[in-house]
Image (cartoon, rainbow, N blue to C red; front, side, top):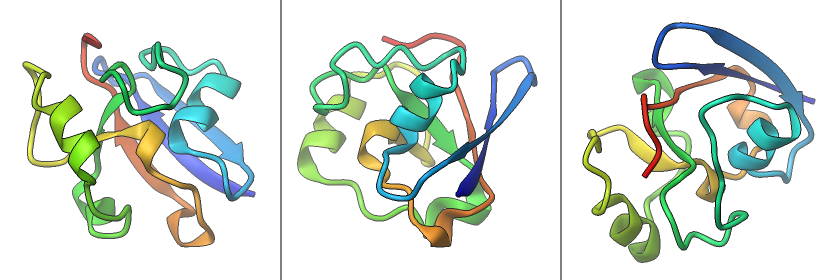
Length: 106
């Protein structure tokens, strides 16, 4: 199992454990983490699973694909460390990953 720490915009923390192979979005939804709406169910056709990846982890979560880039371009609160959690696959290398949810999902 891999541990992921979700931090809400207000600082509330939600540590979860998830099996490898799932997405970070699935880890949030399965564990009832607030702030991840996941309206499209992980098909990268919305931006309601937007997260900010902790700087220490950003280089380890993989590259943005063109579809994810397009979806994030619609977000008014995008930052340099923004990612869609449905596009981050959980691997052993991500054990301890820290992500923060924005105040609103669009």
